[in-house]
Length: 278
Image 1 (cartoon, rainbow, N blue to C red):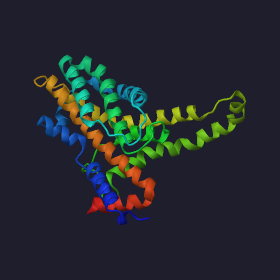
Image 2 (cartoon, one colour):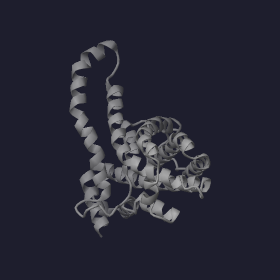
Image 3 (tube, one colour):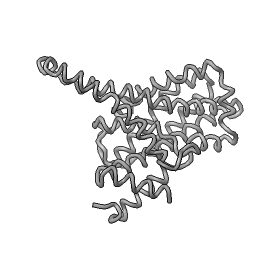
Image 4 (cartoon, rainbow, N blue to C red):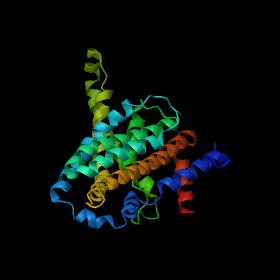
């Protein structure tokens, strides 16, 4: 089976490429506030920057469970994209009004809303939200930042990021398999499976990896929301922009995954890169 034989699937892949190789969230954020975001990041208090990475990891951990739990597991159900943007704008407005102290309270809320929006898109593409691989893919979306000037011509930014996150699972596979093998007999005797424990270790490592990238983006978000003269309006607009961006990343990511299930990963990657180069 070849994707070139299906006009609709090929168009879906073209759409995914356009979304995933779009300008980065940092570029869009700079355009929104009308000035380079780097200068605002440099003005952030040092204490804020130091606290952000840990806060991002906690937010991703909490949001992964809360977001998937709050959605009905009905694959192919239409995604409520506008509603999630509205919720995100509301939480951003609150964070913008009350300043830095509220921003750290707002972070897990806005991250959960964005994660829920991502999972909603995954569900609309026909994926089962109870599948561990789908939960992992939802978290991976937050490592996607769009195309940047640093991406080289040998591979697309999207597949570079996927390789980056996949390496976490590959690195942990053997140690976890060894643990499972050693404890399999005891676990069977006690009547429970090692799978949930293994999944927790995988997710923790993946979140730590994703947080290293998402944390940079969140630092930019905090800097934009900290502009005093914009305040609540900035918080609402920034959160709406972020939710819209990660919904687009999710739509592209899960479209690619759906097509990979149908045609195979290698064929879709080759077609994706051909479209991106063109």
